[in-house]
Amino acid sequence: MVLLSLDEPVLPWVPEDMAGRIQHLEFMTLRQLLNHSAGIVEYNDVGELDFIRAQLADKVHRKGNRFALQFVLDQSPYFEPGEGFAYSNSGYVLAGMVIENKLKQPLGRLLHEHVLEPLGLTETFVKGHDSAADDVASGYFFNMDEPDFVLPYRQRYNTKQLIVNTALADAPIAASARDMAKLLKAILVKTQPVNERIYRNMVGEESLHTARWLPSFMDGALYYGLGVMVEKHKDGVLYHHGGNEFGYITQSVYLAEQDVAIGLIANCGAQDECDEPVIALTQALIARFTANNSD
Image 1 (cartoon, rainbow, N blue to C red):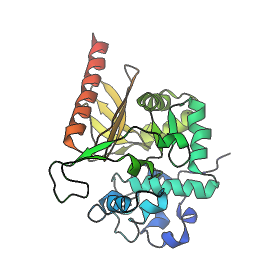
Image 2: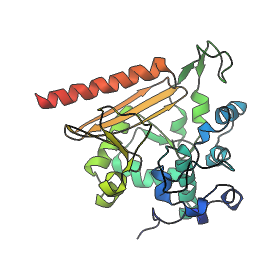
Image 3: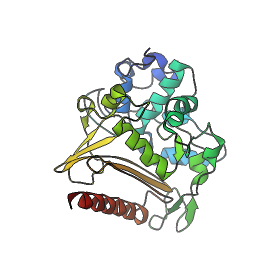
Image 4: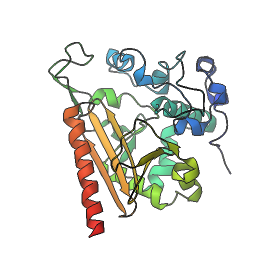
């Protein structure tokens, strides 16, 4: 029995006080929110870092999906639903709200029941749902260049509490690098409960959209399915996805031809001093494994 269709309108499951303030919402589907073709604006790009300013103004209380979506309300969309591609975390935040409202279950419970427990991801915890998710490594941001920036100048700022207290559906979990790699591989080799239908929806040819302004590693043509970047290069296909925010950067990679999964986490992020070495290490590991395969 299908409880939730990717192609049904999301409007009935969005709270009434928000529904009238998101333009074109009546035409948006869950699939469009998840493949970044809905045109909904990215909450991080509203104003002058308004989102993190609001985080810093209240470091104590847990913040959920409504907190992030307040920055999306009344904003002009990037385009009409289905008419383009623009990576927007707001789409995943709204999708999480829709899923919880329709299924009448918290996202944390659904993730445990349908993803974490079936795949044996014992080093992955849901923020705002599992107490273990609060016990993460500290992440650091070094503001060395901008005296007027929102975070302290020339100080090593620990962003852990900001991240722990912001439990959104676009980044709902805290996990180990091993579990990150394990999850990506499970999707692509169809480890149960991932079946052919789920695989096709996530990375099947008919589900891919040409991606723009996203990182690539093999100078290939880049596409986006549902939560996975698909990079087609001259020697095959590379699957990957990364995350980057103040204090943390992550990267998951799966090399299909080599059957190699890679997970990387660094506890600093959103600055060249951290981002560039992680990208370089990812590229070096990819080159190492692809070279070994050709020998």
